[in-house]
Image (tube, rainbow, N blue to C red; front, side, top):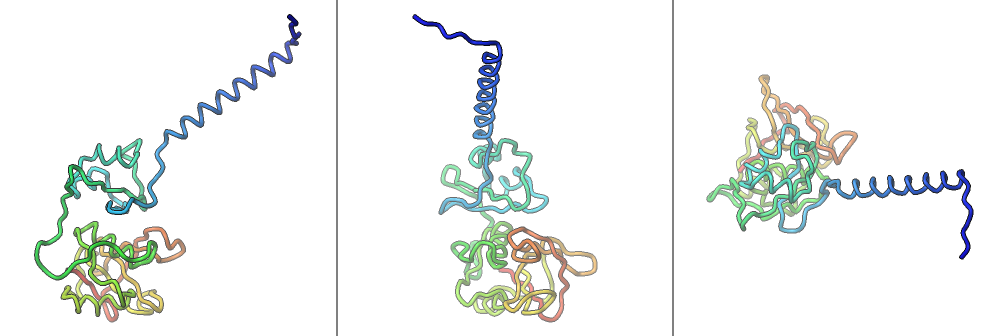
Length: 224
């Protein structure tokens, strides 16, 4: 049997290589344990988009689910750290999710049919998050048409804002483009203006932004 002679330099290099591989393996293992934020939820599961001020426990309470289970099913290593724009998947627990939809009243939609990232998608999604219902219109539903469609479906249209109402801007009003714009009232200011949450607005169209709008010509507020 032959034995290979190793120098101290060779042994040192060998040890350094082994330690490097171990560190890399450990870091990969740690990375694999990190939860990745959801981008989309499976079909049939509610997609909740986090807005500023949300907490996981508040979201869980709104839908009548356990916040620990909600954290586990969304792979949230730290339930106290959620961020604006993050998607939380609301799975059914024991076949039940509490929703605040009204049992009677004008028609409502079955789900959000608008393309993700459009202002119409966010307005429909956020309205559902706040009230438990989607808008019923799908066709002829560019942003500027939402007032007309709301009248058709018997929804309430007002020139006075209310918390959680959908803001509808006509084309070229207060910064809207040719198809108009829709957003959702998050807060009403003392001067009567509103702070509304938006998508497809400003430099980062896929981010949720908060913009001040003023009631007036070409501005209406839609609610069920």
